[in-house]
Structures are given as C-alpha cells and as structure tokens.
Image (cartoon, rainbow, N blue to C red; front, top):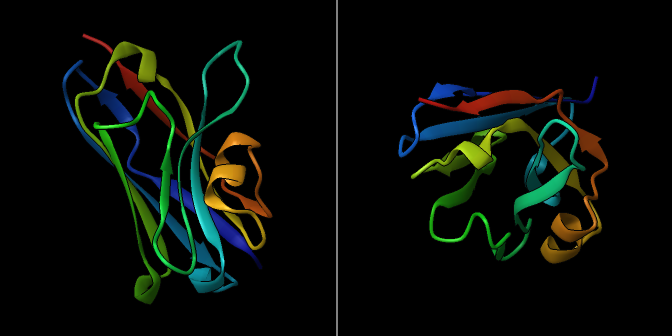
Length: 126
C-alpha cells in the first residue's frame, strides 16, 4: 500500500523551530520529487518547498526562503522540512507529496503530487 505519513507538527511559539518528517512506504522515493505544502483555514493549499529526485535542486516559496530547509534521505525513504523563525502566519496543516513527473517549480507552484500524506498540524502562537 502506497503511503506518505507526516510527523513533527505541533504547537510552537513565534521564533521557534520545528522539523517535519515525511515517511514513504509501499514505493521508493528515489524517483520522485518531494514537496511540502500547507493549507491554512479558509485558504487554498500552497507549495512551500520542493526538492527534485535527481540533482537535489530545490524550490522555495518566498514565504519560506531563508527560514525553511527541505531535505531528503533516500536511504531511509524519508524527507524533512526544517522550519526556523516560525511566524503565526505559518500556522497551517502541512502536507508532503511525491510526484514522478513535475519539475520542482511546477510541483510547488501548481500543487502537484501523485501521492499525498494526511497532513500534520503546525500552530505558531504565544
């Protein structure tokens, strides 16, 4: 069974950090671009950061640049999103996705994914 499972969300104060993880099962992430997306209440899902399957190239939304870092560990079939200097506006459900065809920019901008996780809640509040 193909599955992506996110973990690492929670409640954090403004300025704090969280590290999200995305674990894949039932398929190998090696040949998939991986993306992190988020959806806040009343808003559309948006791409936060994506990383390619081949050369490690990355894409970051403007809101994530300089604060978030995406990474992947193909040996462990996992991906991560390190989030620093968190702001209240980062509050959302965060999803990971895997896509076999899209470029990282297309994946993030067009919110594309062949497989999606169920999401993990991130709340930034004092």
